[in-house]
Length: 294
Image (cartoon, rainbow, N blue to C red):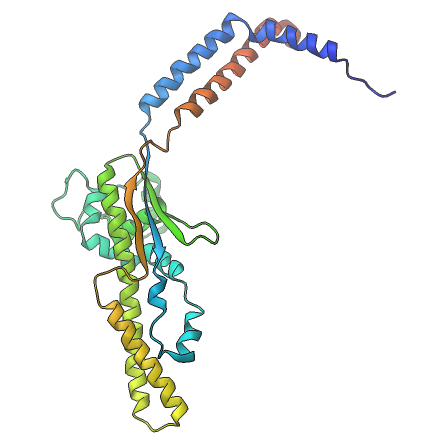
């Protein structure tokens, strides 16, 4: 026999449950308590603001001169400015450059407790110390640029939507927004400059190699190809030998969001109200039916 729902019976049961366990003074007190708890939670929370900069790949630098020829066009097929820039943001070379600029002291010693920026004591947990003792290795007592690298990897996010021309470098901060804006700016400039220095080293090596090969007699096709590569690399060195960004350029400089990203007051009030109401209904149900339940 097929079971049929009795809508009237379901409605009456739901109405009885609401009147007995939900629409009562205890549930109203639970909701009021949830509001007080939410206010306390918000007062104890540290608002997190989003600091972000919008960048665009500098594709103009890939065009080069008309003398590049087929060799350089083949090389450009594997070129991805975004990936190169992203890799350098999280590189040790960029972290070391920022460390030299003093960002280690600004981030790890904001209160200037240590005069020497190279000897900022790094707190070590008990478990970390115990593990080092058991395994027999030494812990570095001071912060280094590798700690700054880990900080960047954990805090800074680079986001690019599929098939989008621009991308965003961002991080959250609950402290000095102006300091974080400067950090994001210096990070972008340092990452781009590090990528430029690597590209300069490669171009100069290619120039030296091409010039050595041109000293030896070869057929005209090979000589023309080497000359094309040589001209292209000289053009690239000229483009790299300046202080301007090379791989990317700014669409929007680093700026802070007007409202905090976290916490979300509306979500906290709603979530706490639901949680406290559920616990209130559960408590009322157990209290009224404890003899049957136990």
